[in-house]
Length: 237
Image 1 (cartoon, rainbow, N blue to C red):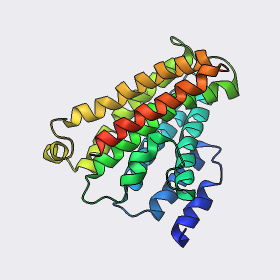
Image 2 (cartoon, helix red, strand yellow):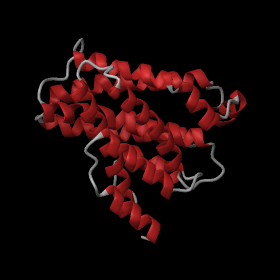
Image 3 (spheres, rainbow, N blue to C red):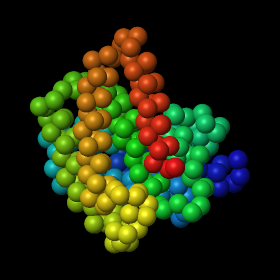
């Protein structure tokens, strides 16, 4: 590792315990990575979203804020762990993240494509696992039509609140830029896909919760990892 990579590796070895500490870690990652780095593009989007989640927690917008804060920390921790493993040894992390990590230095590449590849890995693979890990830690269950599920859905509104900022940061207000980056996928589809991915992640969390402690749990997670990785590669072709 060079000095900058080694510093980032050490930074990621310190566990964030609060949303404020998660934000601080993301800010430190942002400072250490080149603006064109693919991981940095995703990290900037994730940082903005996490700031909005933190504001929502401060404003008491959730029925079960303790669960939501811990979920946010556990969720971010899976991203930090994946990046730290990649820094330690190329290709040693989840397959879901491979596409972004392998393409992070590719030029030219529209930053939105990097951001979407990161969201694919993090939402489609990490989020369901984070929900289950948090429920196991805090007790209770993963169930639809519950306070936890309603809070989970409330995050979609937080994401909608950041839509304008996302466009300015990654698309610079140009629909043509999105068309060039994603073909015939327009900006509304790009934003809406986040909500659809989160809905799918909740369903995956229900499955993993049902399978917890069984021989099928690991096999199911491994299959999910591989399938999400394939989608990531398609996003960066």
